[in-house]
Length: 149
Image 1: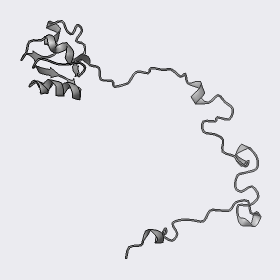
Image 2: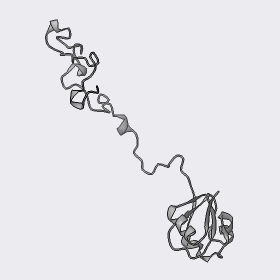
Image 3: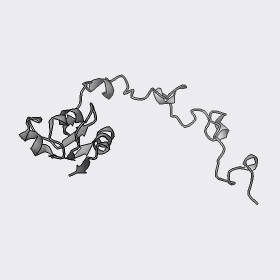
Image 4: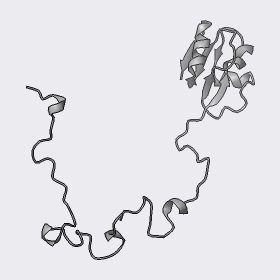
């Protein structure tokens, strides 16, 4: 028979009773309760705040706070919107090389990514490293193809 939620309890011996410290010498942890004689770690309300280093300037205040850290493995793309592809001939294949020949892209350092800003009016076969969802739908709605290389 499975126990119901109101009848659940831990297995016997799995949860020990909390040790009541400071209840006299005979209690086993009496007098100083196992915290030693003196010092910050023996006082009541003892734990210091996280990051406290005993008065030394803490690490989080020593480290310079600078904005605009570079993303370590950032993917860089040569980006172009679909609206820039309207000047191309219908049915042509569009890739990074053809865009350089047409002088739409001037510096092809990175792989091509097509963004979906603007309207597309011609059917094209586009070869790129990445497409946004809106760009892909705009190209394919006109009967064009999106090929990822």
